[in-house]
Length: 67
Image (cartoon, rainbow, N blue to C red; front, side, top):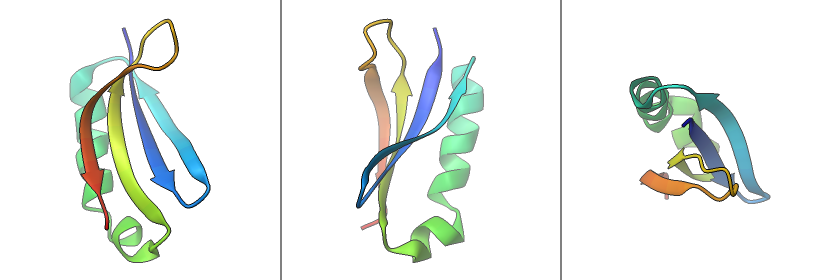
């Protein structure tokens, strides 16, 4: 099982990366939530942490909104 981080912006969903452990993914998720560029950019609406699934959709574990 892998974990993915995606951002949501004005153009859609952008994959940031895939991680083998939940701990790794949470560290990156937290860093992005506190990143000054993401906060100030204005076009990035949010970031999500997803448990990947073979079907492709995955299950959202966490969500953070910049708006």
